[in-house]
Image 1 (cartoon, rainbow, N blue to C red):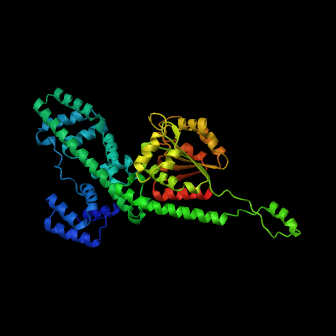
Image 2: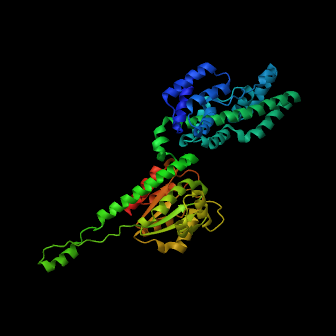
Image 3: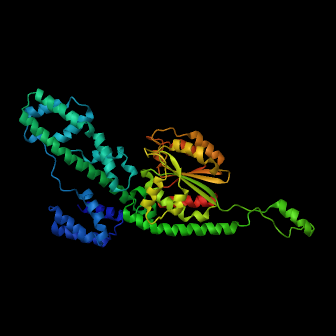
Length: 461
């Protein structure tokens, strides 16, 4: 138990709760006094000794059942009421199913559910390694249950009970078997959910420097809690001011541009060929930008933070035109100029309303065609085109021909993506075929990456 309490302390720290060594020692002493047999007292002892601020109660309540369970009763076993002959008949009935369903039904009837090792393997097969917030465990739990065969369970259970009837088992016995299976189903669902949440919490605790405290900027947008989002909005103002200062210094250093040898020599004729006055090429220091971004709900977090940059940095660009797409594309430049980013959710939905169509699902191919038909003059050889999206296209035509032509027309084509590179090309992702057509692809899964990408655009455009 001491080891689990230490792990729990690490999990709290990784979630942003300050837990010192002295507080852990207090927790050990408190548990010695109250014991672990009564979970209510045990939970209260840990909460009193480890939590100092009311705002961290929610985090404690979220993590406690992952590390110590919810106190559910153990799985039931049909062996408690079946005779030896009936148990043999049950095993014969189970043998008719494939290995996966047979294993699931054995878990549900024997009272011995899946082991922690088996659950860990299922979790890894379900993609748990790409997640870092226990609240995302719902998705992993669903995938794990599907892999275990829960989707087929009603049909297979009906088949099992009918086989047992054919073997001569009485109706009362069959109803008792069905009741045990029904109870165990819920207990195993809870067990899987807790294991999924615990695995994510442990993985987060193993890399705390990336996920809390001063390095909150490195935490995935999708994993941020509402409180953390508010914290990052303050950090965002500092970042924007820093980027504006850097842009101003670059313009000051580069104001004169490179020496124009031809003009210098021509102008020196009035001084008998001596180049007293140097002439320079005048550089266009503020970039022209066309911003095309995915406004689907899955992109909301990263787009909201990007809109902060767009609205606050507009005076740092020579020309900026913005286009949002979902199932189609619409220009939202005027909308962005009027946005109140103090309410980012309202701002995002306002942008969505600026998109024509019915918002069936992401269709970048169709959106690019709309851009070509209606807005292509916005792109010339001085324009940097930024596309922000996860590259998932619902299996529609990705229109690589339009992306390729857009790259040729523009000064450069840049892609901002929150999608992990390991997932490119999986499912409906076209990111693997879009990426080679771009001049650069920048990951923007957290605020640190997003601010770095914006700074590079301001530097190189």
